[in-house]
Structures are given as C-alpha cells and as structure tokens.
Image (cartoon, rainbow, N blue to C red; front, side):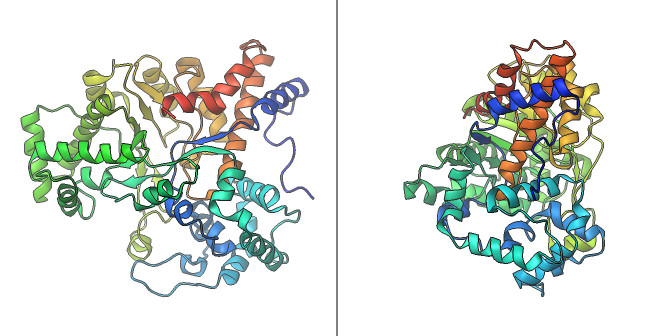
Length: 468
C-alpha cells in the first residue's frame, strides 16, 4: 500500500492536472537548494549514524511533539530534554510506541505528509504507522539507520542536495563547519550569521555575548564603533566558512535609522541593562538597518523572520527551554516598520532583503506591494506554520498579482528534521506546478512560459537570490 498518493496536491480537473503533472516531471529531479535551515552541522562533520528512529523523527521535531502535547502527551515522555537535566524518557522504542499510538493526531497536517513521504521513499515502508505496526516500523528503520547508506553524508547525496545552509549564533566557533571542510567531503554545507544574541537586549546573556564577541575579534565592544566593527569581523569569519546570508528572528519588523550619536547612547543603555521595552525594540530595529548597511559592504543576503510570539508557555520555557513548540504567530506591521531601513538603503539593487511572515493577512495588503516596488526587497516563501500545501497556495495567490514571481526567492525548508527535506521540497514543487497549471488553464500564463517559471521557482530564484 502506497503511503502517499501519486497525484497528491495536483488539481482535480483533468486538463489542469495533466498540465501540473507535465510541469512537475520537468522539475521533480532538480537539485535541492536549502538556503536557510536548522540542521545540525555536526551530523555532516562526524558522519555518525543517527541514534534511533525516535531521535531522528520525534524528539527533535517540534512540529510533531507540539501536536501530541496539545492532546495531553507530556513532552518528557517523548524524550524532550529538560534544561535542568531532570528525568525524561530515554528508551527510543517506548518513545516510538507513544508516537505511533498517537500518529492519527497528525491526519491532514503537513507533518503527516512529510513523515509518510519519508517512510515510503527513504525507508521503503508500505504499511501505515499505528500502535499495531509500531515495533515493526521501529525495527525496520533502526536496521536501516545502521547501514552506511543512511549516514548523514550519504543521505545528503541521496537527497540530491546541492547546498544546505545551517544557522549559527554570531559567537559560534563554527568548529563543525571547519571539520567538514577539512574532511575533504564535497558536500556543500554553509553557515548563516544569526546575531540575535548580540542585538537583542532582552535576550538572556546579551552583555556577556557582546563581551565574548569582543574577545573573539579584538575590538572594544564596550563602544558603539567597536561593537559594529566586531560584527563586521564576525560576518567576515562566517563568510570564510561559506555564509551567503544573515538571519534575524525579531519579534517584529521594526527598523530605525537613528543618528549615530543617538544609536551609540541607546547601545550604552542596552549594554548596562537599562533599556525599557520600547528602547530594546528600537535598538533591534536600528541593528537591522546597520546589518543592511553591512550587507552592502560584504554581500550577505539579509533575512528578516519576524512575528513569532516565542515561548508562550512559561512552564514549558522553564522546564524545557526555547524552541519547544510554544512559539505562536502574531500580527505584524511591515509598511511603517520597514520605512526607516528602506529610505536608508532600499533603492540599492545590490542589496537583497528577504522578508518572511507568520501573518498571512500582510501578504496582499503590505508585503507584495512593498516587494513589488522596492529594488532591495524579495518575499521569502510560506514559512513555519504556513509551510504547507494550503499555505504555499495562499502565498502564490496573494502575492503574484502584485509582486510577480521574480520578487520571490523560491522555496526553503527551514527545518531541523533532516529526513523531511526532500518531502518538503516535493510539496513545494507540486504546489507551484499546480498553481502554474491553473494560470495556464485560465489564460493567465502562456503554456510555453510555464516550464521556465517552474524551473525558476524550483531552482533559479533561490540560487540567484542567495548567491549560491
């Protein structure tokens, strides 16, 4: 029994389906570009076998365990580690059985489609996961993971990944990236510069992180000028290790363009821990503009990922820490928020700023009109909670008429779940081909133009936008 349908996500109507299938056949096997994500570079550096099925598919995947948590399954029983080192389940088979017993909770979700795709196409499984099949699945996957062809580097090559970017903090030593490079393996694993810990005064350890950045670079990060120079030095270090982008996960899209004296005074307050909430927000906004200016110097693509109301559960945050499924989307303003940055550098076509959103209401009202006129702006793909077939379709429907295709950047998977990468890209390719088929069938796109657009959405736009 096939776990995933051959014609999944294609239109129901006959001609549109045939057009979509024909387009998909031309892009299905193109290499994967994954310019933004959170896979662990240590996997590729050490190339050790993944420990067990639960640690591959369940424990690290907040898409999976947040759904189970919503139905009362304790995170500790799913093996999610506690920040205090307290007891959690460590028996992979027990975790897997609990996962299998609750697999029905994922019906209709992107996670179910990704998981079934992985089970079928990667592990050759033809029976549905359930309480009854749990042990069989576990044993089958565990036996596969013990084989050399399921090591991280082999899977990287099997997935036909041309390049993948991980995301590291500004103060990371990038040891795993050095190990990958020194190993002689030809897989292209890049890093991306994530400076949240040294630009957000409300983040724990902010002043200590800045002091560390000073030690790493030799600049006096107690001064505004030295602090900016330290960023330039760290960005250069990341570029040496393959970085083509920086990434900024701010609560909102606010930017500022303050006089340098005011910015220096605000930095001094932030370093002392004397900022109000609004001042901390202003400082983050100022740093987005400073990062844009630095991108004009060194060429890094600037990604802005705003709008997540993080760590909504104080209890889960206290027990399990950050990134444990309790980040919730919030309303986000872009027009007023981005105006300072755009008026400072937005007319520069040699700058690329990629905007993401968790607020779909902003697509047609704000984001598409902005990207449809400012030379520096590009729209990132449907992201996180909207990284789904319906979310991708809505993205195209709400942005194409105003921003077109060429002010977008293709698809990126933004995931920690390594085995889901080919599944996620397959969904994006199917959805985009279906959308193009609908445009052709309704007379809005010439049939001979559609293959070129499909190739661009799958490969060309990401390669150029991220300078890969």
